[in-house]
Length: 421
Image 1 (cartoon, rainbow, N blue to C red):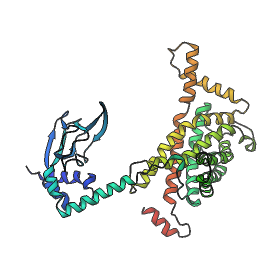
Image 2 (image 1 turned 45 degrees about the vertical axis):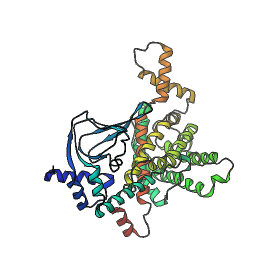
Image 3 (image 1 turned 180 degrees about the vertical axis):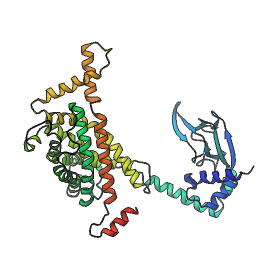
């Protein structure tokens, strides 16, 4: 039974999104769909049984198919197949055994090609060439899914102009979120979202250029493998930018604390230096190595660099934001209330978390344990801090990545290249 005109159009659209046929031209897709047979399957139908020969391939038009794989008696989820994806494309040609059991999670409409029809179609020179190229591109895509270890990530080009623009833009976002976070910690409304921006912007530009520049400098001038313990050298190179840039970060933090700490800026920036150094180490590794590490593992090809960069920065920002939050809280509290010791600030964090412990827990010891866990595992202001770091990473890495080829000496050409990218 042939396809109706509407089914033919839908079939061509769905086949064009299957990786095996992704680069087939319209005529080749029409030939494939001319041999396709429409099928409908109710929810719960088993389309393929693991281990049994697959005599056809299915391209899903509507509905969802779930796959499960039995490994040594344990059932594992194999993922879901949704409209525009194929089942059996790797097995139907020679009727190999199905690698997983496929079951309809919803009612399913699909187009099928049996093994004989598929074999005949692949003998057509036009189809064969396009399918071969499609599969070649898929192999190349998998080869590009790199797995460089975290501390062996190499820096991307980060020109000073691109980094400076990124830092200037990000400084406004960071300042606003920092003001909200400080207000959350102290219980007082922020005096202004953008305090001392005349100091903040150039300091932030120097700060971010420092992180990126130090990474390049250390990578260029220190050969890890020339040392007896290269792993320790890589750790030192990863944390060094955070330690070196802590004084600059302290100046930025001090700009946001004038409404709480009346000390002069020259004195205020020293408050909370130790926990701030820990935070800066986490920030530096997150912005540099971890962002590249996560971006490398995003399963997108090179045709979507902006999205891949943003997703990598987002995941890195979530991790860095979480682990840097307690050091950030401690350094901020010390900055705003320098007369208190770190021990008193830690105790205050636990006391504040006590209000979040369920009231049905009456034991003082149990409440103290839970309050301590909440203070350090789910600390106050975590959502704001994580949002701040995620946004900062996306703005910084995204802007730098977009402007890295910007030629400041040839503005018209540079602007045109950025707009058409």
